[in-house]
Image 1 (cartoon, rainbow, N blue to C red):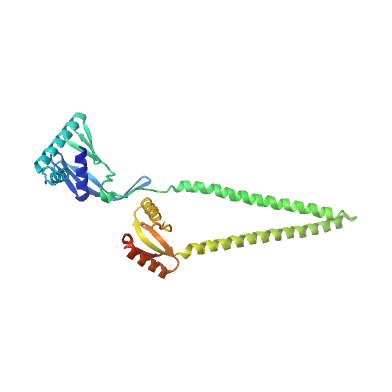
Image 2 (spheres, rainbow, N blue to C red):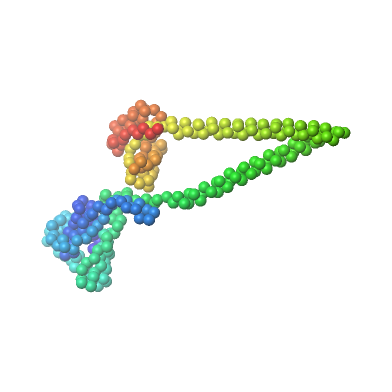
Length: 305
């Protein structure tokens, strides 16, 4: 039976249907994309079975004869033997796994019921089509909450540090200015000194905060400028899934294109072999890539600012 599976798989990869004499016909049908729970099921071709397709078009027999290098009559006998073996095992066990195509079941009325294999990965048009997992936004919300708590704790620490600094400044002032004979005037002088020290401390802290904020702003501007400089990307492939795009990007890296990367998806996942800040440089690189390597003869330039 294994050889029969190989022949049917090969013919289904090139045709929309194949008839197995004595069993029925296997037909390819296009299934659109769908959403099930938290997954997006990719569009793919699925296998259906029609038990009424009894008339043999000879395609399977010709394929067996050509591959096995036997006569047409010998191929017919071999196919008849395989189908009779299939029927015997199906009636004996009540079910039969027919290779990668699916599972046959037999009813009380001796009719065939076929349950197809949804994946059908041997079909060329299904290659690389992977289902997508929708993101769980509830988990992201829970992940943000600890960050807020950390911010609150930092603010509390800064407040406590300011209070400690104020108390230390009070101690230094009290040591430098002993008690005056006039208690009222001593209190006023100490209060004025304390106010001046507190203001000085606040000004110092404010200067530090301003310097830190200015430095962070400069760093942020530098990072933004660095990110936005390479606005022209030489695209060499567009993939339907992120997994296939990352695999192709890894292949380019192994081919000595270390700057290859996957861009943010817009319907498809585009793979950029190299990015430039100048449009002319990007066009020149694209044209050179087309002429030197036939693999990239369809490369094009994407402007993404």
